Amino acid sequence: MGRVVCLVAAAGLALSVVPAQTAISTGASLTAIANPAWQTDASVLGLAVAKGKAYVGGRFTKVRPPGAAVGTNQTARTYLAAFNQSTGALDTAFNHTLNGVVWSIVASPDGSRVYVGGDFTRVDGQVRNRIAAFDTATGALVATIKPNVSYRVKTLAIGGTSLYFGGSFGLVNGVVRNRAAAISTVNGGLLAWNPNADADVYAIDAADDNSKVYLGGTFAKIGGVSRWAVASVNNSTGAQLPFAAASAVPLPPSGCTSRVKDIETAGNRVYFANAGDGTGCFDGTWAADVATGNLVWKNTCLGATEALTYVNGWLFKGSHAHSCPGAFPDGTGGHFLLLQNPANGSLGPWFPNTNAGPPTVVGPLVSATGGADLWVGGDFTKVNGVGQQGLTRFTNLGAGAKPLGPVLPTLSSTTAGQVKATVQTSLDNDDIRLTYRLLRGASNTVVASTTANSTFWSRPNVTMTDTSAPSGTSQLYRIEVSDGNNAVRGGYATITVR
Image (cartoon, rainbow, N blue to C red; front, side, top):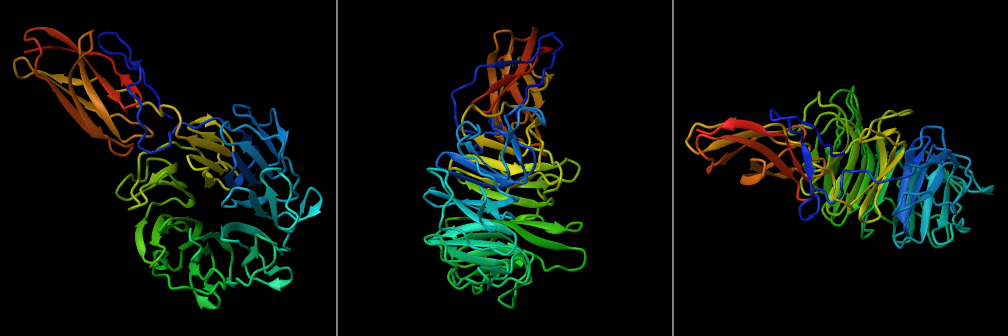
């Protein structure tokens, strides 16, 4: 969250906040200020947004309003709940009892249904072996979607009229389907799609045109053919397709096992999130071209990446990044929410943060969008330093985060009638490029301005010169910094003009 630091100048005047200038969008398309949302009492593992509601699943059994302390003002919701997309409030009408953890949720393209996967075998007392569907208009359980899946369903995706799912199971409706299978969204029947993974599948997504399906996990073979951790497969048979970009994931040598944890398709690109075990093991993100299967870029930040969501032309990621080559090094702390340019993987202008809580101590684990917002779930207990457990959301509404208040400028006057002012650039959690103005006197006359980029890992100095200062007089100077929505002024420093 943007913050204002109170700096008292030599002249005894404190920093002040001035009215916002003409509003423009933030650099990130979403503000870094978390909007109000209900909380959960344990981890959120699945998220989908449809028809004005956010559907949330996980390990939780109770939810509570924003601001409520742990264990207070709780409402029972066993592993599944829905919240108003605009307000973040609990949808009291959607109330189902499941007997096991929800690991994944996906909405149909038209938003008429949400599909839920996990460990459960009953929904409201009715048999639903690890997959269930709900009508978003009525909230009712869909009668035709009830495959018998033998063990955990970890991930879901929809392509055309197929519901693809992966996990740890070996049978579906008594038929061998090793860790990946598909059913019809029309009648719930088992489809022929059969990638046959030899170990768990953590992530599935279909290309936007359903031309192919992508799998991620800990497998070493698909259909008996070697393919470590990621694969592109045929959308009807599950047979492997050529996928040169798979080389982005290193084979597991001793001391390093990197696996794909999330997949996000958007137009002609597909994006992957990796988490590695072992020092320096690949934890980053990468992108491939859907048509060719070639690698587009690879980002090698360290700190496992768990979630990716494409919103308004940006790629938002949940991770516990602690080092990003070319950006910030170790020693800057954990950065659990970041933004990447989908064209090249570089970090963008968005720096809110969470912490990491039990049981995984990872932080964000899943994210989803309703088109112009971002919902984030995980095992965190704080967002931007404020108590908020399990669930949060960000929107494009409001003025965004305020820049950090500028410190006192360092002043010098070596030329008659001129004063130079140097100041360290400020920080803004949803803008990198900021405007700086040099103000003179109690009337705050603008005498110079400039723009500069800054991030939490790079804060260069800027220098501005007043070329019309009255010689031989004592003058007050202060700095104003603006992101286009918010302007913040620092305290005054004094100098005698040559």
